[in-house]
Length: 442
Image (cartoon, rainbow, N blue to C red; front, top):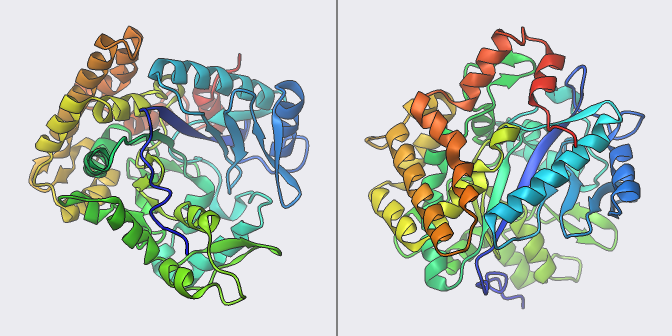
């Protein structure tokens, strides 16, 4: 019988990884690129294989990714966006330098096909009915699963096909380190997200909120998304995560016939009784199941911060810098936990809803989100300085937080800057927004 705790093994050292999601859009219309055709994503992957020496990645016979020589991965997201996944690095500075270089190279390949890589929190011009679904067999299974949930998953397809983020992964070194870091990140997630709100435009129109992405995530599947409420309490452990994930059903699994819907039963029941076809879950199934849950902080062999909107190109590194500064320095981490003492799971859930609309003006319990986020940012900077002093980072790593300092200093979020540009000098022209916001080419 598979041991459900086996994937939660402490790391030997603290490393850092990121996943950067960017829209792949037509540079003139801003609409998401199709898979096929002269301005399609398949040609981008073919160029990456041919010109960057990348290894092709296929699914169902379709080319949907490319593995770069140094371990980074380029993949086609469900709705046609592009995800860049770094290998883990010991140094934040090295990680950021490599990611920027790779993304500029990929942007150059895209530009030759009339396409742009567009960072942010949401593909701003593609309507849901025009999402160019990737040729991945599991997508139809997922769409049917979410449709069966009804209103609770009203925005699931838009989340699958249009939302963007920059996600950061950090390591834990022991059970105690797991407890401390998971509790920290879960409490930090919806508060710090106010510093990152950056999805105010949907289908070419202002939405009236600062993070449409955060708002959409509230209507995907509440059982497997949002705040990990149990982690906000004392003494959270791997066993708690296993219990939570084991109580959820799988959405799909891999079989000899390809991807098929999984039985709608808790995973732990599948472990005990099998899939019903003479087979039972193994470690790969458990690993796949853990990839089918999307809380703000996902715990597996790493801890993955998923709560933040993607930022503009020049501020891209603020997400990993913030997470590393807080999580990888003991004094900063414990000071942040002390600052957030008394914040309840209910406070975090309400803050997640309010931050999407109000940003820094929201509240978390009886506290100001803006003031709390500012204090957390100061602790993150303290943590990075300590890493520099210990020789773990270059001095320039501290400056990766500067774009967030500007948000705190001015009180103007990235979403509000985007709206001011959209209604001002850009004059509501998709091509102008793409030109101003795209990842620059080499």
